[in-house]
Length: 192
Image 1 (cartoon, rainbow, N blue to C red):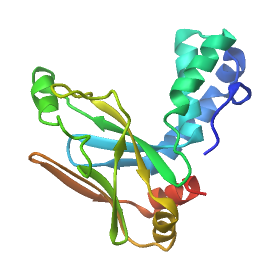
Image 2: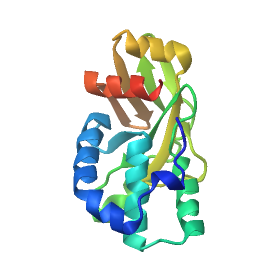
Image 3: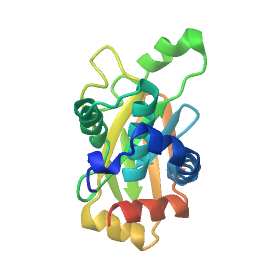
């Protein structure tokens, strides 16, 4: 997927003018790309539009206008975009019980080990590849950036309409969610 560059980014004034329509479009787009994975996890598949929205919102909130700082934000957020043959996502561990946040998060230590989270396309499991730095031996973040390397075989399986699902198996937490047709169509577009 082509990386974002400064010419893809509207200045703050232009963005304020386009923001209502762009935001509505992104909300609709994310609804097709958001997948609940059990009671505590949600995964959102990222693409250029979702990442551009995140960059624009960060620039807006932080009032960033300096070209070098804009480029820095692009460099950071471009890491969320998938490479060739991949789909990429942000995985959220969503805990609403304030007093239990750390206890619940501790139960997810090791989530980033191979095979704990996978995308199943047809008969094949594609393990999530976690970006480094989101967990340690004794701590884990509530937000993770992951990729699934599907390649041509995975793309063909998705395009053929075979069942696709996300699975997680970490300690006592187990979940499986079949992907909607809309989500699968989005992933096929991402894979080109």
